[in-house]
Length: 36
View 1 (cartoon, rainbow, N blue to C red):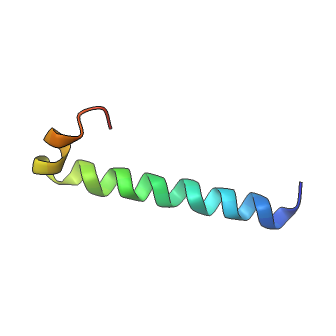
View 2: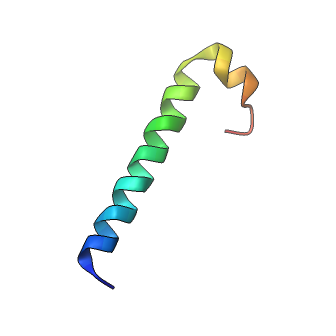
């Protein structure tokens, strides 16, 4: 597996976690997305 692909996958995972954390930090949006 190319190292670049691993780094891209890690960056994508961190971006998704950041998006989920941002959504959870807002109570109004967390109510709209209870599954997250």
